Image 1 (cartoon, one colour):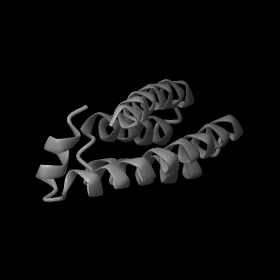
Image 2: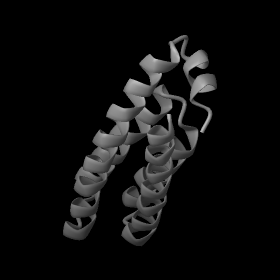
Image 3: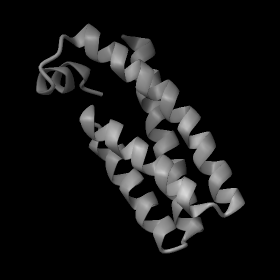
Image 4: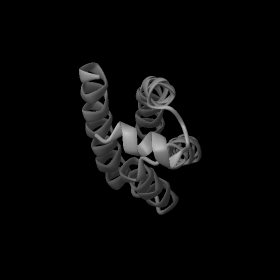
Amino acid sequence: MHFEELAKNLELEENEFLELIGLFVKTAYSDLNKLQSAIEDGDTEKAARVAHSIKGTSANLGLMGIFELAKEIEMSVQENDLYGATGAAKRIEEQLDGIAKALVKK
């Protein structure tokens, strides 16, 4: 993960960006739990809201891979494709795991 480059794109110092990314990871894990619960309950409105939140925050931080997956979840739940949403959520979790590991190395 190129934290320095992402920070520069946002005109932030790397340590500031790392703090924001750390907060994002914690929040996104929590949001993924909410998303999974909403999917299990068949609550497509809640799932769409949570995905939208993840999408917005990831876009603001320049995490376009997560942004695209959250966008995919939004579209999937709008089409009542909860299986597709679950798969995309799993891929977001994998990306978050990668970011968390990279943060530990910093």
